[in-house]
Image (tube, rainbow, N blue to C red; front, side):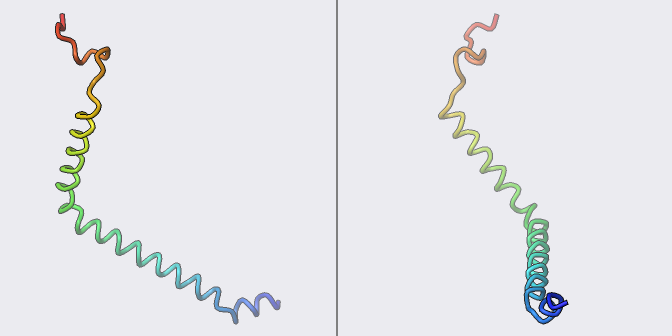
Length: 74
């Protein structure tokens, strides 16, 4: 019974509720921002993706034995 009284008088339960509310608010703000700014950021994401793909293929060309660099496809 003393434990229950300490829990009711203590602030640890209140702190946990506040952290939960803060996490919920942060989640709502994050999802809302992604919904609102997502379409505007999509072209920039695709440009970045293409640049990374071009950079990767420029530094790591295909190996001669994998069939992509054959001079005579017959």
